[in-house]
Length: 276
Image 1: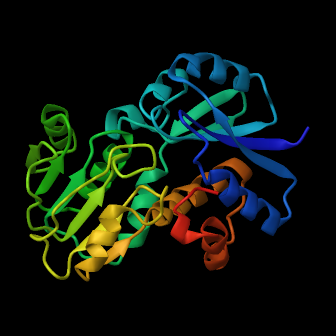
Image 2: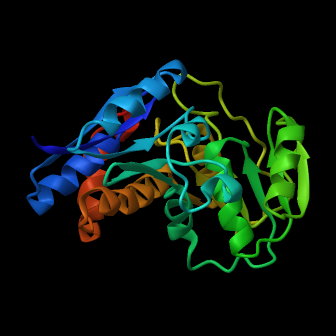
């Protein structure tokens, strides 16, 4: 049998992960496959039980809405439950399935050269992706963090969890001045409500970081670009976290020197804003 890995979520049709991993597998000449599988919340237990009995299954990436729930069905050797509280990757180790989180490294890579120590940040959302991002912000010593979320109570609990100083507000609260604004929610994603923020308070040197990649050019990125702000699109974090997971699945580093070629493959018609 061929070694294989996959991405799971609900919905899953929009996922670009099979294109990313497939590109790297072909580039390295590896005899392995990577696919996407629709798994509902009710089906998570049976999904992991079935994969546990498949010796050729190397693991999976996890997208919305399973990043927290999946912790129940895998081993947590790295203490992810107590630290981040969400996983996005499961890897086989013998007969064991180990949960980990590559979102942290994927998020941090594009901003690694920035000095965010003591600088204010705005984060939209309080789900699994936001947890990884807040964990990273705490590690790099960010200043006050303002979270905009449907539930301010949930957001405030995350600030406390990660030892961050800041405030939690509803989504209609004006965006405060900050060095970095990150959309870590599903707002703006195809099939989801739009994210409509007034970016007027952001300084000219602020950076707007979008986690949504379907469509690639979201309303948030367009608004930031109209203001002349630097932007980071959703493919940056997606490719970054995928690269870390790929190495865990297949024991080889992906060819990151071909990222330009990969991005071109992922955006054959950028104006259409559709996932491949």
